[in-house]
Image (tube, rainbow, N blue to C red; front, side):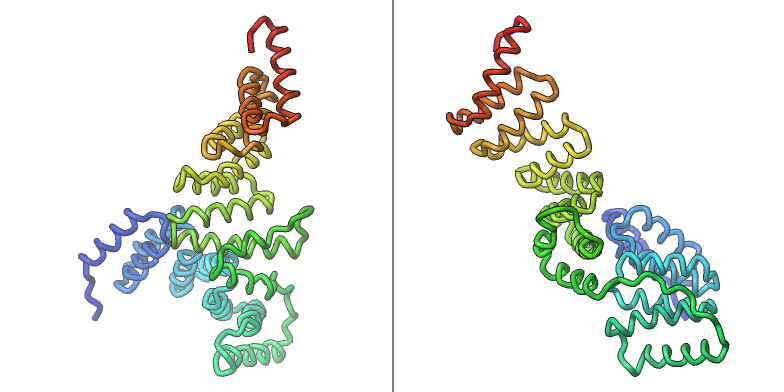
Length: 329
């Protein structure tokens, strides 16, 4: 008989509180409570994890298994499908989804999921392939009509996710250098993002992972998510000038020149000899009507390169505007 260890439960719950973003903290508590037969509390702990853990795929997976094992296939499949969607390279997620679909009587959907698992190299001929053959025969004998196949992750995307998981710096190389990404490139970028998000969840103190997430999210047009990633990288390393400049670009895209100028000013402090940062700060301040501050930024550029024509012209124009307003540059 299972004897519940309340001291261990207390330790596991403390991990939930001390590291609320780590999915493993919630799945360990959920599994522990489920083994003790305390299903309601197990689901409650996992539901808490859905709101806090990143990524939440493992939490969705276990929650789906708990619902399905209790006979609530609708809720179980909903969570299992989310887990498989968030991490399509995890064979066990897709495998368990397939088995739950079969248990729920959704034979055709189960077959499609099994085909994906087998195509990805899962379980070999002695495992799921036999279930696949049995299911195909059952469908053929029943005369059931084939349903629309669910979206499948291209094998290239699965491979990209695995590569980026091993070498996260590859993600930046996947970003197209010209034009907007096509549909195939977008799928590749989404795969890279999944890998980076998983790595960041496991290594939350690595700013480079968040910087990479910001670059990929920017390319996907997810400006707000990209800003969050860039700011997270800066919170971890306030001297990360590349993340600073990424934030500048993203704030400009979002139409927030005040925040863009603030991050650009930080970049000029971190890299005082980077003339481009001074010029960009000057443009941002000039466009906000802050002529005196803009002139000072352009003078900073001239201090680096006295022959910079843009800086010379802007200082001259801004000084003339200030004089016309009755002020002194």
